[in-house]
Length: 563
Image 1 (cartoon, rainbow, N blue to C red):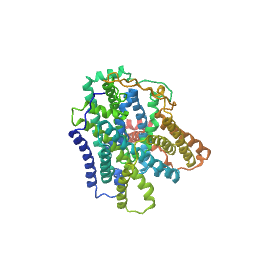
Image 2 (image 1 turned 90 degrees about the vertical axis):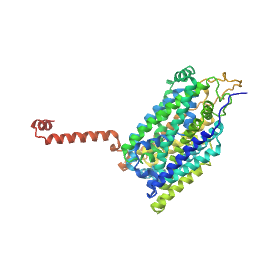
Image 3 (image 1 turned 180 degrees about the vertical axis):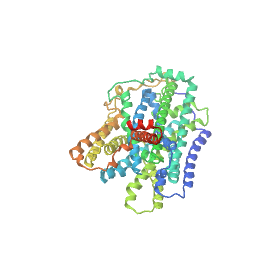
Image 4 (image 1 turned 45 degrees about the horizontal axis):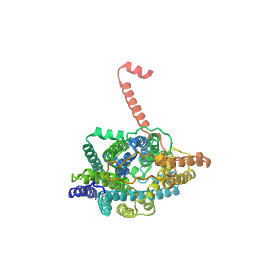
């Protein structure tokens, strides 16, 4: 039997973990108290659009950089190598597209719910279908985000399963319900700090244990984990240069450009400049988190290069690897395991709070406000009640592969819908509806194919692991070969392309060019940063010219008149 012993939670760990929860709740109480005289759903849902770039950028980072990210990204590197870090290229392209096309467009329109746009641009049916898909995806996604880390920490560190779930419910309910958008944003500032501190504590301890950074990198090199450049164009391969740099673009562009949670967050900025700066600070944060995850994966491999915990049966699932590492190498340092797990739960709290706020906004603006004559005060109270109800509902869902499938099916086609509306003036309701249905069906086929016929090891190519250094022997097993499916990183692209191709063709065939569209509902040159820079330079030259004309020097007058 294995004699390796790992630590368990000490009093100091519970104090650190509980301290993070208390501070998160305190921010909600404070923001609720300081804004008690401000009524209206606009204050609750968008902070009256008075927030600055820095706190908003942290909220953008943490909305989709979840606890699952902290638990699984290092394991991806552990199993498949550092090439996973090339996803940073997808982040860069997606943030550029989002910040230069979709962000200024939606900021100019100023809709609390982006689905208001779909009715103005197309029709109410498309708006309602978009809302239905959004609510289904978000509630299932939140179910995964709440349950998965609680389960991993329960099995990996002995943290009580329902204790973790219920504490998440209580804290999120407090600061979402009392403080609204301002509390969500400022709590994210706290939580991103805790996430980084927890991740860094594990990395530093692992590096010290292994004898330095050079040893960790040397182990990664010898174990084949420094595999950054694989240019195989085969789309069935799990991780290559192309799947990571191109495959993630549509998915992340959809998240940052056209998802309700992110749009609602960046339109809460006091100006479009603050919103643009927030987007690019967010990009730096995403890259930093990814690079730290890659190095954490190297540390994980360096520590267990001779004794893989999963193969040895020390953990039952890959998402328990990081909690196991923490409890293994930090068992003599009370408080540090608590800091790491506080960081993991910070990822859960920040993600769930932002998505709950977006669900509340959509329900209030799209499904309640158009059919009622409630006062501003009553709408504010109702929005707070909806925040609590949505969180209670999401606790029903469990960790299931259906969550990932639903997200993959919906995100890509919806990005295609908004792209058609914003960038294609000829797109009409018939084309967009056909494109959306086609995109969902194609994505469904691809996702179900990946679920029921997973790719073979020849396509995923997991790197070699061993249990030769364990103090017991384990029976080896072979992975069952399945159907070679497309890389999961292309799921979003497939849905987006199907929606765009069908949408464009059907729109042109049904007279899309002959329909009149309000120019304000499509991307305008005034939305582009290049136009704003051109206008600024032109105005500057005009001012300088006016100064030349006013001068008494005849030479300057002659130069101006002849130029």
